[in-house]
Image (cartoon, rainbow, N blue to C red; front, side, top):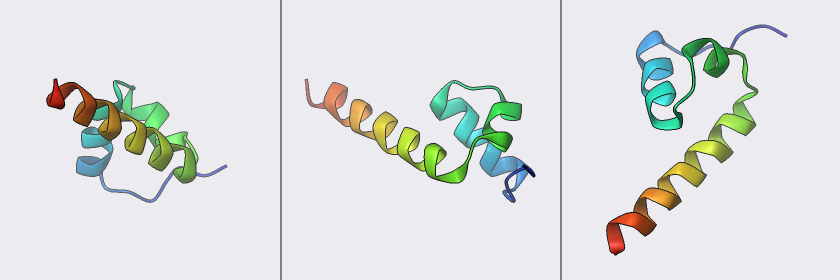
Length: 50
């Protein structure tokens, strides 16, 4: 499987939000990355409300 076609800046941002190494971000299928980002955003919203 070839790496995702995203910029380095985007990969760094995703790695920080998901607490994952950049190498994992680059080789994780895009649909899984999007699901993890949605989950991280939902968790952030839940912690902000309290």
